[in-house]
Image (cartoon, rainbow, N blue to C red):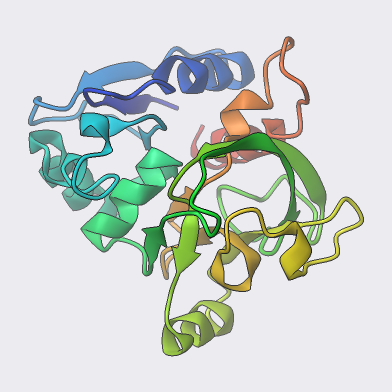
Length: 230
């Protein structure tokens, strides 16, 4: 499996992501600068990591979504190359229209950095196959604009097509508004595109993998991708 992690000015989670992928797969990802116009021809996985691309001016991810490399990322993704987008990467993803919805300011208008529980809603994808359906995992979040919004028709479409990857939940798996950290519609923490070849999520699974992390519960996500693409 060959991975390309896209680096933008203001990105700060590319090393975390690279460490997690190398820890699980034994293979070092290639870091690709946003001004490049081509990805490696043999790239199996593209990653848009977290951070504060372009200082989060305009809307988070809005400027990065139009960086030179993104034309290639979008073209590859539309042809089926797997694309994982986390936090600021997820914000870029919705800006490109590769997945539906928008990411708004957190409900309480404050930056949130803490551990959260997630419930696996769909384990039939290249990103989630090593999880059990309804499995609970604990991973960190760190964002100011993670409030996922989609209108009623969009939500119904996500549900009908099984495009919801993760929901915020309690430690026992209960999903309700009290365990929703940012106000996201239906507690949504991550979504797929219609073909399940692209996944965007606000929480940081890459920070729940390596030995010094608070938990290793993000590991199955990277094992899933490796098994699917190796």
